[in-house]
Image 1: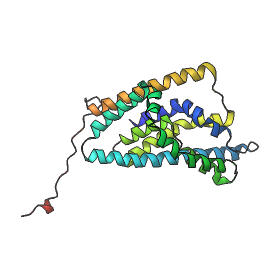
Image 2: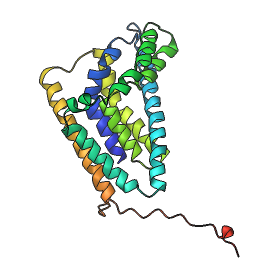
Image 3: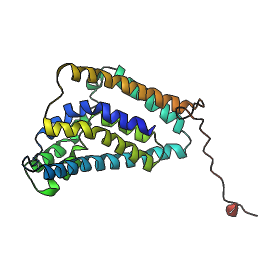
Image 4: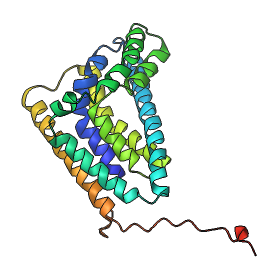
Amino acid sequence: MLYSAFILGLLGSVHCVGMCGPIAFIIPVDQTNSLRRTFQVSLYHLGRILTYGIIGLIFGLVGKGFYLFGIQQQLSIAIGVIMILLIVVPYKIFNKHKLTIPITRSISKIKSALGKELKKKTPDTFFTIGFLNGFLPCGLVYMAVFGALASGTALQGSLYMILFGLGTVPLMTTAIYLGNFLKGKARRYINRAIPVIIVIIGILFILRGMGLGIPYVSPIQEPNKIEANSDCIPE
């Protein structure tokens, strides 16, 4: 399932350009020195990917808890269903029930810190901007987090988010260098494809949880067994 993270990041980065593009457009990179600019952009991406890796580590660890309780397959199915519902159910319904208010309130400090960093040009600025940028709310990041949660281990969860972040690098880099380059039909076509990709990934998670015996897609999951240590058995 790790390949789905990179694909989600690569194809979904059009959405990332739309959401985080304004930040990418005004990053104070050096326009006079191409080598220095490349280094600065790399630091920005490194900061973002580190944040994604930390988030994946945390949610992967949570997912490991579900695995230890033997409900990893049910979790995978539930996450697949949620991913599909988030595409099918209109966004207005979530706003109607004020489900996004806590998230909206939590990002005010991040935006404030970003504003301060964007005014600087010290070497660490670009890494800090990327690191803070990674915490900004984004629908695609939420989808990737679901994947990290279903991964089953902290390492796999972190790797899932890192691959997602790497998938966003090409288009985000282009946005920094060229600005808002995707316009008209190209943007519309890719934006229409994103929900389809998310639904497909959701279906893959459901199939994975069902354990149908399909190699690489829906392998049969062996039950989690906890064997007692013989030394602990009283004579």
